[in-house]
Image (cartoon, one colour):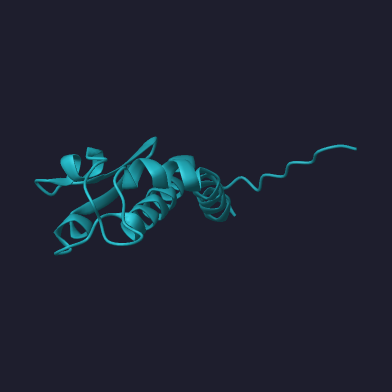
Length: 110
C-alpha cells in the first residue's frame, strides 16, 4: 500500500485555507454557545463574535455583563439556558468543531 501525491504546480493557499477552517470552527462554536446562553433581552447573544486569522480564532461576547453571566453558577436561567455557555459548548462540541475546521480546509485546498 502506498500514498500518491500529485501536485499540478498551482500554489496552495494554505494560509487562506487555514483561516477559512478556523472561521468555520469558530462560527460553529458561537452557534452552539448561543443555543444555551442566557437570554432575556437578547443583548448577550447579539454581542457574540467569532473571528479568525491564518493561525488563530477567537469566540467571545462583548456585552457589559457577559463575563459575569458566564461565570455565575448560582443564577437561575430559562429552561435550556445555563452558565458557562461558551465553555460547555466547546467541551460538548469539540469533535464537531474540529471536523468543521478540517472539512473547510480540505474544501479550500481542492
